Image (cartoon, rainbow, N blue to C red):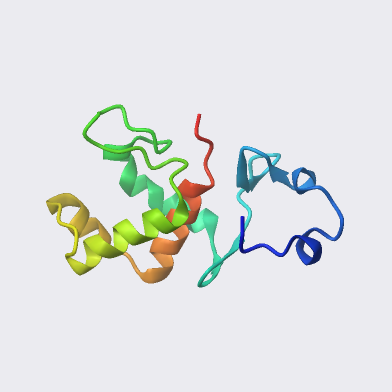
Amino acid sequence: MPQIEVDSHSKGQACTACHNPHSPLFSNAGDPISAAGSTGIVDVTAGKKLSATCAACHGPDGVSAVAMFPNLACQKQPYLIGALTEYQSGKRANPIMDGVAKSLTTADIQNVAAYFAGMSCR
């Protein structure tokens, strides 16, 4: 995570002392970890709650069973933020996603993007 200043963040510990190596926004026990994002603190737990809206098309774990719906799990956070923001603005158009995105606040977008970006790719 390029935004993390390792020395001040870890205080000399290995990243894996606190973080799951395959999903760094989750602890080794599987609990969400709040992370500092480019626009402040994100709430991964809130993002997980918001992800329930996405589950019908993108799967309960962010992996779609239907080829026409993209997987969200393990997507890069900036990509997800950009896509949702473009649906909100009308730059990207999809009748379902337009309505979903327009119901989200900026914080909601940050949180749900952080949640999916921190999920395992498996």
